[in-house]
Image 1 (tube, rainbow, N blue to C red):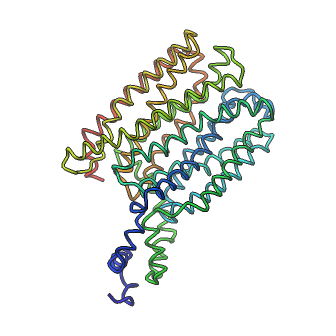
Image 2: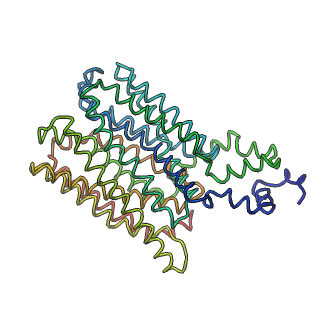
Image 3: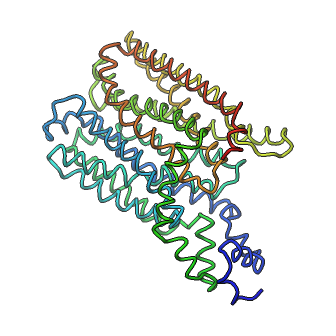
Length: 470
């Protein structure tokens, strides 16, 4: 092999030549071949990055009364906007950050986004004007959304399909437990200090995670790893620089999530399903405090303790759903003669699709009939169990279908998810006021049952055919 001929070759050809020269080194460069403790360490750090944003999103719930007074808010819709605007930014950010990670690497975008989130989140404690607060809060949501999109790409880089169930269990549980932890902590913070301290405390944890990530996190995106290795070996030409850094290439990467959402039926189905689950989840979190204060007459600090059952359902679902997903995948793959198939992920979608509406009905009618306090909590626990299992199946299906562009695919899912997460908490108070908790939950559960059963059926029946057209 002549090194002087390398610049005339394409990136893929030079990468292949480099692999032939040092196959052992290249095998070690593949994140899937890293030692298991090293891969788990990266997974946990990304999950810790991911918990700070949802904690910040939900911590405002117990402080809404105090914040409304200081920010001169009297409209109930604007009160909910204090939480929902963050979720909107949190959902829209991955559309930009996900593709950027496929150009500049996972670590650079993750660390930069986390730093910007810390700044924006801290600034949320300063404004005394509602529109300034809402603007900064939106920015914090965008900047804090990196782990939600890039994290899926990191898992795709690190883990093989049969290993992803357990890693997804760890990765998804922390961001989803965050909205349950936030109100519990905030309930006691606002009882002893002013509401800006909820942002100071969140930023303090984010700074700690950022410092650890700076030391431990390593690049996992294989094209970027190879590009750096080529550059170090002196095999990268000017053409490589223009290929990866030109504005045209950047625009192509930023447009990819929208293209995938507009042209891939699989992405469209899963985006619709995830959006509904995400909307229900955020709506439940936003109104759960008021259920206990209005229906059961509990104090804010005591009412916030009921979020423990939301966290319990999410943790239980993550710990059971992930390993079960892996076992089902391994067994079905063996039955198929060792052939991989993303449709295997739909097997667990069916029970999850029935658990979600069952939990909603239990929770809604228990609150409506003012049953013992344990009854609504059992219902919300069942509901959250089904939500996180559904999340894991959706994310695993996407990672199996689009391993190279996993971050862009996850970013595509966030478009509808952002709209649902933003709008559901806003209309939730009006829905419960007009229909009551029981009938409102019945309507939402009916929609969840129809959507939840239709999506896995369509994917299992037509998924292979749709993937052939990708």
